[in-house]
Length: 324
Ligand code: UDP
Image 1 (tube, helix red, strand yellow):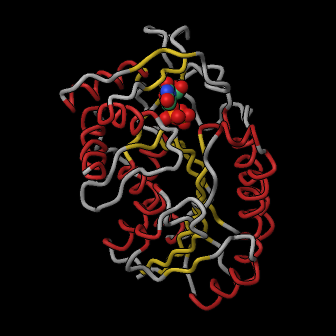
Image 2 (image 1 turned 180 degrees about the vertical axis):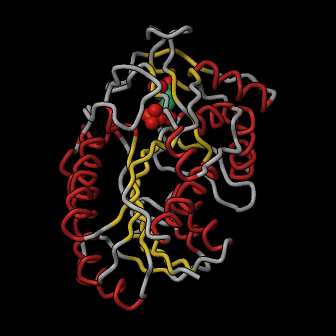
């Protein structure tokens, strides 16, 4: 079976993908510095605690493991934090990725799946957003990913590095077949915050209800983390077959407003969500919805979680287990 190195495998999407790879029989090794991820997510895996910027150590791991491909998740993900400390995002996200590219070149590994983001589009001119929409990030976080995407184009041309870039929309939910779930600290994502509000009765703040959308709240494309993990497996299989470099949106193609998500949470939990309305959050575009036909037609990806209720159900099971 193929040997895969997963960077950031202790984090949310990385751990879901690593567990799914292992269940499918791929020999899966994880590298993570545990600065944001959780040790319990890597239990039972071959694991190296390492920051990617340690190029020498990373090169040694890549050489010894004779890996067929790398799936690279390790990165910071908070848009707000990236505006507070841009240098952190360029150093960790861009610098860490460049170090990985050097280590891969030295070790002769030339297949990479890269975690990118819808934030590369900034505030899109229209939705749904196709992959060839204008790249215009409005945060250091988005820019830190764009810089890597651009480097990958050059690495393809001059180094023969084949990559699949997945631009994530709003990853959410928890895998019902594993103990994994979303546990960011601090948590900034909508669904876990709504569930926490239900569990604690502490109101959550909605960031603005004066957007040019039907109910005034922002619209996002919520993709279940298990479906996202499947997309990574399809991407790595494509590269292992000798496939060319590609860029895909990873979203379902269906948008829901913040208030629709609140109603879904109320439907699933049977309780009302205490909330108040606050000002807009800086950098939040009114609507981000993927055109995901490319991923579906070219790689045969098909999301299983197409209803918000089904997504929230899995997140609720995880959150209520955590609260016990
Ligand atoms: N959101 C909100 N209150 C919160 C967190 C998020 O109203 O406490 C909104 C946010 O403005 C956005 C949507 O929920 O429209 C999804 O935000 P999240 O941070 O989960 O993901 P993002 O879209 O930033 O990737």
